[in-house]
Amino acid sequence: MKKKVLFISSTGGHLSELLQLSPLFEKYDYNIITEKDKTNEYLKQIYGKKIHFLPYGTRSKIFSYIFKYLFVCIKTVYYYFKLRPKVIITTGTHTAGPMCILGKIFGSKIIYIETFANSNKKTATGRLIYPIADLFIVQWEDMLKLYPKSVYGGSIY
Image 1: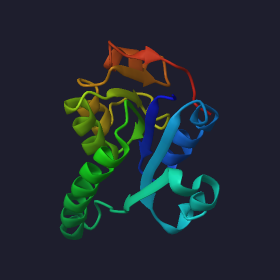
Image 2: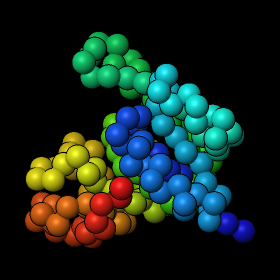
Image 3: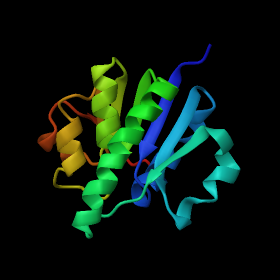
């Protein structure tokens, strides 16, 4: 029986980084969660029932974002108990935070890959997940100074 692994990230660059891990997908009973937007609708044809979507939200519209984020948190609880992952792998950002926290509470292993886009400062999600991650991977050697318990993994691309 294959281990249940959840790959989760927001859309855009974080999702592009996450999809670089696609050679690993078939080794596991995997699922993918990301935000739904027009740029990633095609993923349903590739991954079928293995991909799930959360609502897309942007902090630039803060009032509506608060309500969307509350809905994201509720839907995260639904997905966690539906999928019951043993491992959660994420490249960030805000959509992954609640899933990682919930996963940690219920015993999932958390693997966080800090984004390639940041080579000299911590991301908000990185700061949130670093203390609870079972494995925290950085893509720039300089980031080892900011996250001393991290592992340098090199570029994901």
